[in-house]
Image (tube, one colour):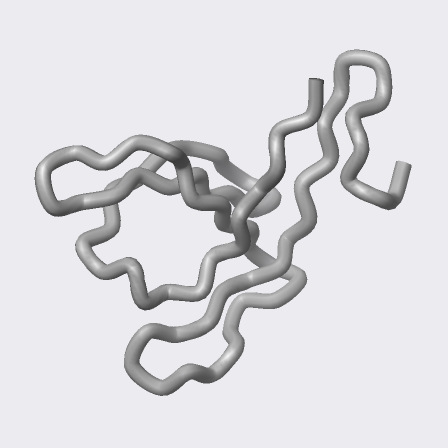
Length: 74
């Protein structure tokens, strides 16, 4: 599977990195993956972050990071 489509019970997320909020530079490409969630808590928005060691949700207080938006497929 290489196109991000659900395959049986597995979903593929690319490690696309992010755009830095202060410089606009691309960073962490191929090492980290980020996806915005649809949940906002106070002034923070939640995002899914992952690499080869860990996966988890975190809070971000700036939406200027260029995380990709992940479409949901049924």
